[in-house]
Structure formats: structure tokens, C-alpha cells
Length: 189
Image 1: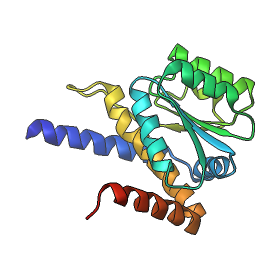
Image 2 (image 1 turned 45 degrees about the vertical axis):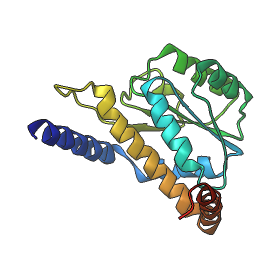
Image 3 (image 1 turned 90 degrees about the horizontal axis):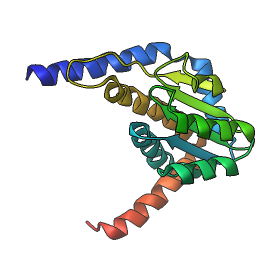
């Protein structure tokens, strides 16, 4: 029970610390980039791919065209096909992964606005962001800091998703109803 309590306490501290770093102006700017994008793309490798996939899964519920691929070369190809009329959310705990930086470089070359989610404000990846969100991650005796930052990175995506869903209102509700209708055929009551 002590380990469970410490784990939950650390996750709560991570969420609180991340929230303290978030600015209303950054949230609004990110929302505006997302809702005005022709395509919204999600990029993350390794553990950050879990966060990117989770965001992709959530954003399927709003009326946007989405892009995500977990395989590096395909993700790099997707990045080269985006333009200044799109938006990319790029996630990396350290912000130093060379493959993630290559994706960010490809996006920058195409003038794609980027929302960066990382734990390190001075990382090379952070420099690419038009909007930047920082996830707090403290060392914990039994888990790596990257696992702890995953909690706050998912929470950042949740905030962005909720702002976008609220923006789209009834249009998002219609998308969600369509998804539920389709899924209910597979899972009848």
C-alpha cells in the first residue's frame, strides 16, 4: 500500500506542477492553431508515441482531419507532406531524441506550426514550438521520470482536446454521436 500511495502522490504532484506552468494565452493559441488547421498531426516516438496515440484517439471525436503514424519513417514522410496550413503536436519527454528532432526539422522546413510538449524547456525540441507546454517530472525511486511525465503529457492533451471540443460544440457532438452509432453496431446491448 505504501508504494501505491507514493505512486499516486507523485502523479498528483506532477499534474499540479504541470498545471502551474500552463498559461491561458498558450492554451488559447494552441486551440486556435488546432481548430484552424487543415490537418492536425501527432508525433511522438518511444514512450511519447503512447501519448501521441492517446491524443489521436481523443481528437477523433472532433471534426478535424487527423494524421498519426507510430512508425518513424512513415511519421517522417507524413511530416514532409504537411504545410503552413496544418498543425503538428510533437511530444518528447527529453526533447533531445534525434529522430524526433528530424521530424520537427521537416515540419519547420514546411512552415508547419508546432505545439511542443516536453519536460525540458531548454531542449532542442522546445525551440521549434510556436506554443510550448512543459510536463513536470520528478525523479521517483521506482519509476523513471519519463513514465511520470507521461501522466502530465496526457493531461496536457486532455486540456487541448476539451478546449477544441468545446470550440466545435454541436459539430463535435455530431461526430461523437456518429462514432457511438458505428461502435454500437459492433457492441449491441
